[in-house]
Length: 197
Image (cartoon, rainbow, N blue to C red; front, side):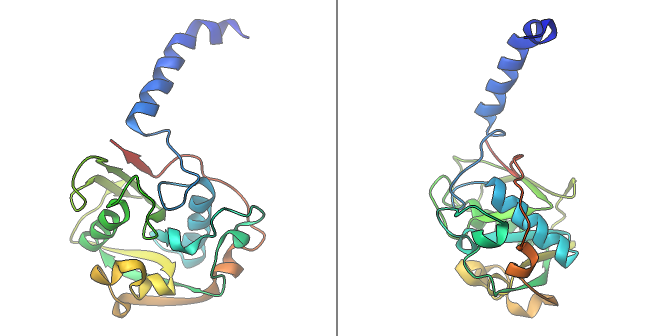
């Protein structure tokens, strides 16, 4: 053990404890109950393929438990096309509210994210939990439009998102399936994109 580590160990332990209390360090093995490292990596691949500002992958997209292997093995409906939806910032925030509405309970509508970071209250009522949301490091503007990549079923309003957007907002069909986008890809994004307070 290095002298530098010994000297800073108390500070490191305090910092780790603060992170755990604030929720920053909390990842979930359950894709419907919190940010999941492999599901976030899958969302990154979907966003990259679509060239979008952000990406949403609902928990219903994934196999439970995670079978391991490449990211394509993790999705239930590999033949689903990736599309891009134009959402207002207001709709994006409403979608995130739906995503965390039952936290910490498992929810098939929980969204695994790419390009978005969210701070939310775990104790507030279901429709008023979002404290802060950023796209590419900038606070979401309710009046601005954002391009969000997602499976076609979600774009059509699956798992209750028909209350927030509809298929008329699809602006791009990529022609790429989830399986094609994720085949041979591995990885895990261990920095959670949701922070519960």
